Image (cartoon, rainbow, N blue to C red; front, side, top):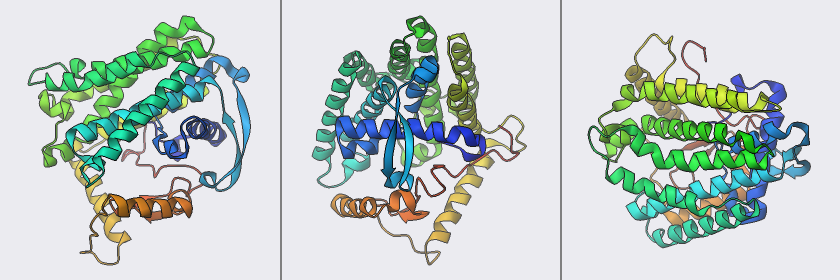
Amino acid sequence: MLAPCPSRTPDDLKPRWMGHFCGLCLELRDDAGHLARLTTNYDALALSVLVEAQLGDDADSRNAGPCALRGMRRQTVATGGGPRLAATASLLLASAKLRDHVEDGDGIAARPGARGLAGMTADRLRAKAIGLGESIALDVEPLVAAIAGQRGAEAACGPGTALAEVTAPTETATAELFAHAAVLGGRPENAGAFRRAGAAFGRLAHLLDAAEDFDDDAARGAWNPLAATGTGVEGARPLVRGALADLRAALEAASLVDRTMTGLLLDRYAHHAVSRTFGSTCATYPAAERREHRRYRERRRDRDYYDHDRYRPEGRNFFAGLCAFTFLCCTCQMCCREHYEGPWSRKRREGCCRDGCDCCDCDCCPCGCD
């Protein structure tokens, strides 16, 4: 949801955003190993930013050496409790996603020989998250229990069920992570406002993910909360707008030293994510037509990438993909190359640092407004 958008990021804030991103990545490396850097999550940066927003100039940072993921450039990176909290959230989310794939037998766990490895990896990431949480006085077990309750909430869901019941586990876990940011920032009085902001953020992320996957889930016959409750994408629109308003109100009620980065991530980026998924209020054509146009554009990109319009390479199996992934990482193609072939899916991917670390190809709304 909070992927960087070059057109909506002032030039003077790009280094600060990169400092939080690199701080999270390096924290994952130091506490959970190099492979844990693959769990780096854009949305988790909100936690690091919230801690810094309360500390201002007193926030911890250090100068990091050249890194291939930054095009061998140096960078001032965030350190301390903020990146550790963000790393805990990233590890928990990655562990939960892997565990879901294992239990459902889909995704990466559906590949031959991968299910057991995925389960072991999920357990390892959760153990690392628990250890990292202890280092910042965060009890991770209630968060793990809340995340585990998501499956039960989905199983009990049916037509007419309120979406709030489905998103409740996500809201609970996110609210507690946000509330702990107040503790790490030395302003426990912000815990209530941050908890409300976290609940709104969790609800917003859950609904945006469901709306983006709605068509694909319907085509695959996969479970989707908007379809299961009968709400639909259009029915979720007012709930998403309400979550966005709740997030802004909660942050305005908090006492912050510097609101610059929170405004960028939790206001501008969040609004852009809603506009990208549901369309701007001033868009002149319906959402269904807009989604079809996006799918057409994606098909065009795929066709332009390969030599022949009819050529669609088959995906690699787990071990062949692992070899391709290792090669792509060692040759820095995943970060520095403009386009590369995904190691498992073989679909076109874009290097994260191809434009000087502006890590997205902005998909703004048709009329150019936020």
